[in-house]
Length: 114
Length: 112
Image (cartoon, rainbow over all chains, first blue to last red):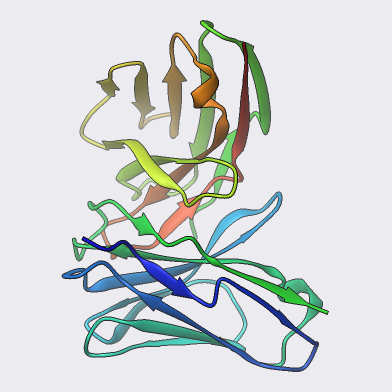
């Protein structure tokens, strides 16, 4: 069974631009969540989608948005990029709808904002 | 919202010794506490978890303890090996979907 796939793996953008990251969950997983990982800050929750609906949202500005498609694939978008948005963005999928299931992470998309 | 604090941020131990990482949480409604291991350049992977109705759970050399009253939980690794070297993250979650609050991580180095 294929794992969680994230694209692109690496990207460089300049301030003010926007970026779209993609995540394909493990087949059969309907919950997809996104985390921002930065040195010293750990993993910070961005949002979670289940059956195309955003169920939870973390404390990030409205520049960060996401969506989920009917095949459970998810995208996140960051508009008007700032230097502080440089981070590893991790997507995780889960089989269980609630919080009792394991998160399966992708390898991440490393975003550098210049 | 929930706040998870993790200590220490770095930990070095001799091979064969034990390692202990501690986390505290603030929201008494949190009821699920997983631990993830992230090796350098790789994705985080679940190594053990504990639910609020259990005080301790063990899986070979790894154990987790939970004190709900004090709102803290700990990861214990015994007989450490060089392959245990990684960053370990604790997390807490409530029964409202897959929203996890992670600690800031502990970089464990096992010295051969």
